[in-house]
Amino acid sequence: MRKIKQKIIERMGTRISLSIVHPEAEKLLEEADHMLADYEARFSANNLESDLMAVNQQAGLKPVCVDPDLYELIQIGKEYSLSSRLALNITIGPLIKLWKIGFTGAHVPEKREIEERLKLIDPADIEMDAEKGTVYLIKKGMEIDLGALAKGYFADQLKSFFQKEGVQSGLVDLGGNVLTIGENSKHEDGYWRVGIQKPSPVRGALVGAILVKDKSVVTSGIYERSLKVNGKDYHHIFDSKTGYPIENELTSITIVSNNSIDGELWTTMAFGLSPTAVIQHAENIAGIEAFVITKDNDIKMTSGLSPYVILL
Image 1: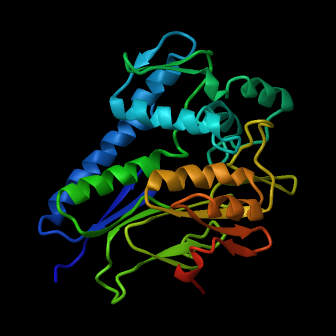
Image 2: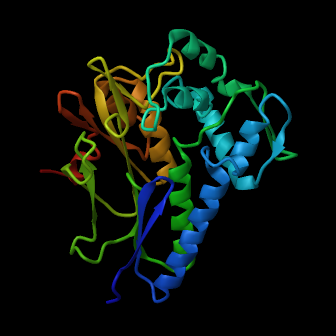
């Protein structure tokens, strides 16, 4: 039995772990690292030299031609931002950069500042031309931020690459976004154990684990980046209507799905719902399972997921 090879990478502001079983594992892991470096260079909303930032810098000025994969991801993000009346909005960039939660200079902005930014975060103001491959933000000051779905897209691309190269067992962990390939030979039942983070900024503190094969497990929580001002907590998941962080009883959502991008999309979109509504919603979507933790540390999960959850 071949041993699993692992590569740890620091990219995209997080710790990435790639683990595969393959006779040329080291070579494939190096290629995967190059893929991630390329995605980071082109898709980043924080790198002034990225292709995405070229779109943002030309907001209100002119359309920008982008690579097909970036065009596809923006198109997916726009479609879901418009079709869901929930929390996903890829034009949220100006609001995130105003609050700066999780970054140096985080603060609670003035109401008038928030109201100004709200005029710049309508995904309907993204114009796309499939024939020319261009993206145009029609208002100066608009910005696209793909942080709510990019890691899912990258994880799916890495899994596809590994499988094309003959990898039958492996794990892609992009910091809170885990995608498994085939079975885990370390366990007789073949299941991978993916930990569920406690609602705490301390990494590694778990409430339990989910057993999966060939599935994605994505978790998003309000504890990841937060700001406390005058005794009130503010987190990094915003309501596009108010310009303030969403207020409800949720602290974290974990989505189990076939594709990682679906997990990314639904962990964000569902944050606009109540804990009970998240579960009810997920029960009616084929291929989506949900696990939520409330501010009272109550746990709810979909019926299809419960046989595969081990609580500690």
